[in-house]
Image (tube, rainbow, N blue to C red; front, top):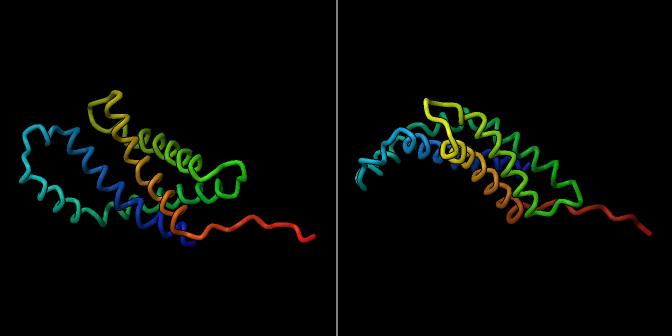
Length: 141
């Protein structure tokens, strides 16, 4: 249960911020912006945080469920699990968000893919380090 809580809290927060950064970069906002504009970015982020959780909660929980399934596969270690979860979320986010707007190409695909990769890999890492994982049962002799 703690695993899903970590994914539900971290995923939409980090993913929403990265999505905001990606969309502002894609719009060309940072070409003319200066350091004073960073305050506006954080103001927009905190105003839209409720929508990040509204639309990011279910995908984060789905990625958490896949992480939970991979936890029970004996041959998949923690590092490989983090990478598999990250790559899976990268592909899903790139497909979901990559077709937005008039631009298309490798940069847009990678930026929107990182919106999925970073929060899911970070959540999986946090779960591995801070949540007690169940140990495999041993047969009594």
